[in-house]
Image 1 (spheres, helix red, strand yellow):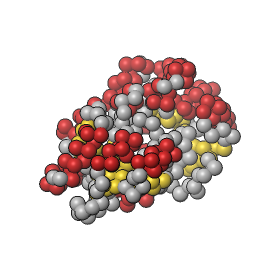
Image 2 (tube, one colour; image 1 turned 135 degrees about the vertical axis):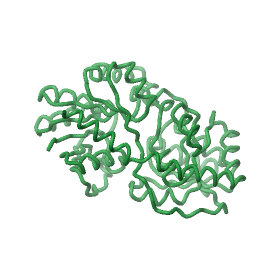
Image 3 (cartoon, one colour; image 1 turned 180 degrees about the vertical axis):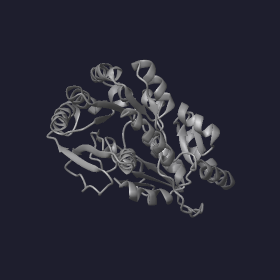
Length: 366
């Protein structure tokens, strides 16, 4: 039984992609461990088909956290037997790269995002140079890697001269019948994910001033949580905006079913957002919820073939308001989008991606 360590910097509770990956590999016979970190407010871990471990850190964020976490992770990996370590994004790759080199084991890279192009990195030139050095120092020396969409695959292969497979970040297929929601007020918008910079959340909240019949639910927390709550108070939108906080994946499905329209908006702040293909986009499809998305390459390509939502060219109030009113005022068009979601949710399912994942790991250990 091959033993694989997957390493992330979150506390494991809300990482739907890693839960899916680890579950699928554990179910076909791998000894799978998911390694993350313990945070002050971390909830007890739910039992899974794989093993889980949280590392304690003194620092909570910033360069000292990343340094400390990689050192702790490195020594953890050095003291434990494994056949392969899969580093999720650049923030865990140094520990995985060096421990696997020393122990002559396999290091795999799973790029959930274009890490050197996230807004928090792009806006800090020194930080960006450091992470670019980490990427250039490690990724070109790896044989096995995968990412979440075709656009990132092409970018990474060209930049790092390493072959990448594509394993999309899609949910398990939902087969239960879904009750049709009425268009009686309130009309509910749902955003699920981290509340970080560049997610179009400020723009969406501001647009609600022209949409008194609409409620906006935010499921998640992040660096912008406090600022967004303050904005809601300043604009007097407490009645329309609901902050639901962190919601565990198994509970989030029920919340999604109560909404009418999914929100997946981004500012073009770096190539990470421009080439993104968020898991929330597919979660909305599985729940038969049309969504608002940016007219970026991956979303445009899918919606051209499967019209499951609307594409926005910008985040001006006029564009956001007109798009939402278009949905509210045309129930027939909304029902057509839902019918398209019903077809698309047969296509974009984890059961199909899991086959590709299993084939990838068979090749790794060939």
